[in-house]
Image (cartoon, rainbow over all chains, first blue to last red; front, side, top):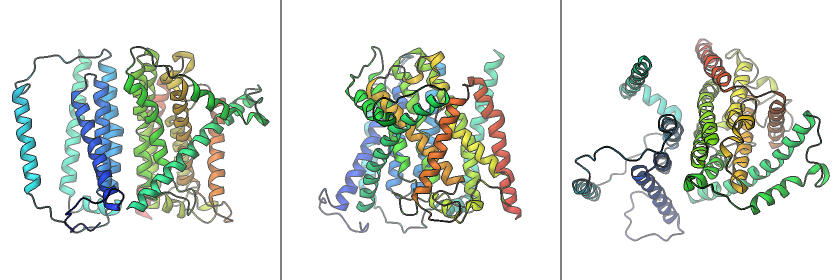
Length: 182
Length: 328
């Protein structure tokens, strides 16, 4: 597919472009449906399942965008680690199906819908008005090149992310420590 | 683009066929092997050596009624077996069986297999939770804690091999070991004197990752009825089994590629897919042999083995290899 070509009419379903578009739509649908399930499910384990579908959809999107390394990291970290940790926490902490409880925040009800509507409208307007320039391919996106970039040009970002993780670990330790003395 | 898609679809269909055939006949091999080790007959009535037993079992499983226990989470209950099977199938796509027999070779093959393998634990979790059965929940908590703790040393050991080869491409890793068995990664070299140890670590981890005895705490039938698939009958149960055996084949393939030279012949003669198959089936035979020889460990022994022995050892191995690679 020639990216600089402006698409004036919808391509046929069985052409290369049509199939690509169909795959893209399926990925988007999976991501969105997963996200909706994650937000709306009554049972926490189902919410985790929805989250997993959403993460797999995002990973597929990365793969679709020709970045298999990021896609696989997404699978390994988000699906393989984050989802399992959440599910594990649910199993250890809440054996009973916990229903929604606690007072609803000020953003629930009509105000929430209005906020969501404004944000959605804003995003749509922005997406339609923005010119999407086709950037040239920087490199092949292999593991080696990503590693070199991460440890040279983007080493600051890389280190900052590790500090975030360190803070998370310390937080978890502090919480666990406090629980032990009780 | 579309050719690649077609390639992947054909590969997935072939992978499903390969996985199903393997599952059917590995169950047969497992039962015959178990019987031989425990000095009893095993399935030997249907067909020569009982070879017709697997298709008959398959027909039986497929014609059985699907029973969903009352109070179970229906959707999760139905999704879990599929989720156990699908990632295993996806992993077959990137495994090179020989120089030319590979569906879609990726330069991050190792990463892809681990990424999909990590989804297996979620299937077990959903199955256990969806069944609403206390034995199943207990079993899935055990199985998942086991999977998480053995994934760490397995990944670290795989990283050691990746560092030595300098590539995550399974094909490159295999080609780097070509030309006789003394080039294989399992044997110590100047850069990595502890390679046999890595192999043993990796092998133990792949036993634990596939929930095989002596690490089959997830389905300890003496304590937990049948573990996380207690409530499953018919093809749901069948899918779990297919997933388990597909995972065993993938574990054996990965061990073969990382340590035993893939499709390379030990003496440099006729490299090809037959050597690969020979190696993985020898490894699987070892899996079966170990399963029926050793008693089951306890969950504490299992977790201690991983966190107190395997992870420190694999980390030490990683550091040593990194240092030696830098020095030489």
